[in-house]
Length: 66
Image 1 (cartoon, one colour):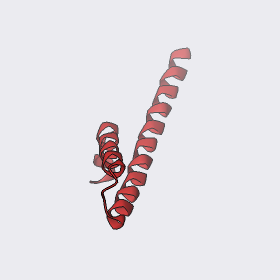
Image 2 (cartoon, rainbow, N blue to C red):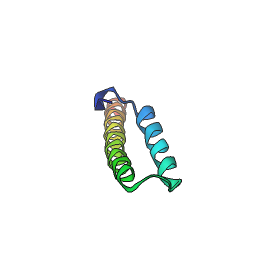
Image 3 (cartoon, rainbow, N blue to C red):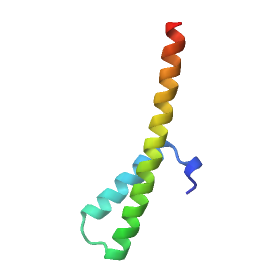
Image 4 (tube, helix red, strand yellow):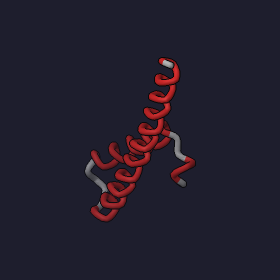
């Protein structure tokens, strides 16, 4: 899925599914590595989306104070 098409909720949901699958401990090593790589990417997407939301809140708070 394309990064811009991901919402925070979608990305965090996919990340939760990856964690659940990996915690079962039944995935082969190659698949586990692929899931881990995907999880790292989704974590970055979530962090970027949260950073963007935080910046918007800061702008709105600054505007409110003026």
